[in-house]
Length: 111
Length: 109
Image 1 (spheres, each protein chain N blue to C red):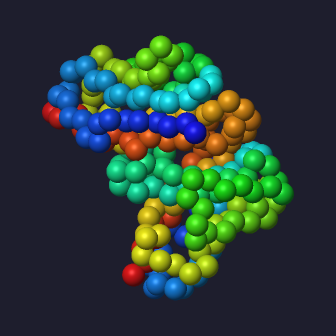
Image 2 (cartoon, rainbow over the protein chains, first blue to last red):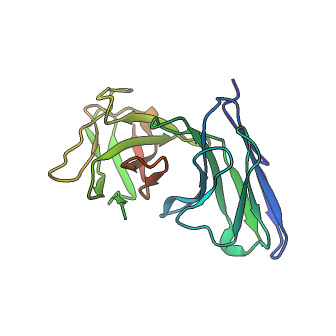
């Protein structure tokens, strides 16, 4: 079982470039999430999708968009990358009220 | 809005010593609390949830609603416990978790 798979693992972007972070889960979970992890700030929720066809903003949505393509896939898009978006991005999924299963993360650097 | 506070960014203890990682929360309703752990260069994984009242890898945590705390404890720390620990809260029927800022635990030999 792969669980939650994120691609790419590493990425360097120039300011103003765009990119999409991909996330897929094979556990048939309804809910999926995108977090960013920054030193001293923990994990902050960017967007989440409670079920297929729905998305909602989290704590820090500015500069990001998401797409819940189907039940398995939840992508995060940076339309015009900024240095402040340098971070480690984690995708996670969950079923009902149980805990999350996390992906391995994407380390993004914007120069 | 709910909030999770982990007051210690860094915590060092010697092997065999007791360890307590603090977590305080603010939420007006009945929360569900979790501890997650991230070992070096690994993905975050669930350590324990207060509902389960279980002990994982020797760690326990008790929800104290009076003090709004959910501290993580282990009587005898091991070097392999060195990791980043996050406390997290689920508010009511929400699916998303609110995380604290994390505590980096180092267990010294």
